[in-house]
Length: 305
Image (cartoon, rainbow, N blue to C red; front, top):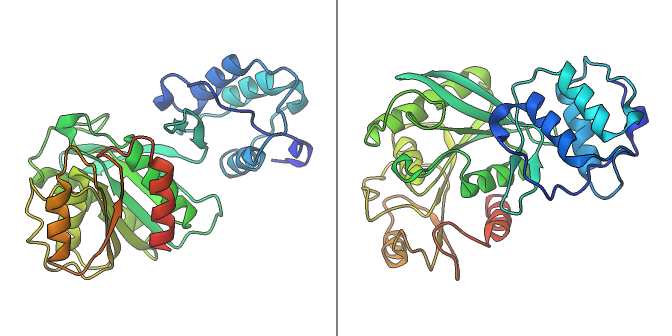
């Protein structure tokens, strides 16, 4: 696609929520067009011009979008009509669109299909793949959890491709809750799939809360994991003392005001860990990092660099 005529474009402030964000780019762009109504075109305001151009270049390079100068409303409606990409918009806690590069797909899992969202870093070249496990499915945990997407953004900043997925029985993933055994099998299936499609890339495992246990459990059983990240590991519910064969660098992050996972128990465990780890505490932060997601992302970028 020739983007030479689009250098003046920038995506305006995304201070609205696109409903039903998982419908894919086709419908999402139509909704975007209906919501914006900016017939005069994109306005200059920030780096999102580059994001849009990169998105179009990566995903629509074979397409010719006629008359982009008709303005954002008509241009995006035209783009929605001629693209059929299985992608989607995601928003963060500030209700802004943050990722134009995600692709939703399903892969074969142990008990049926698993729903997966993958991203490539904006920089293009990536040195590894970060796999992220979500919180407890029994407590409405999904791959769209805000801490999970914050990890994904930090990984993106570090130049990693990312893989988020729903455990069995969550979202579009088949099956039902597997008592951690099934979820561990799901993660193994994701790892094997990543090794097939990205055989030369390092694998980083990460998880939040329940997902932290699943990721650590598999890192404890699997060789070749480059790094492990655990956020708010529920040491009071699951056997983290058995994680004695984790040989990769292991970062653990915990809020000291966690109302779900007792901070004192995590601290005591981290002082006498079963495998070497680095323990970071964020003061004044609860379990879900409300109001502190940017702080969490910045800490991840610094600690994992």
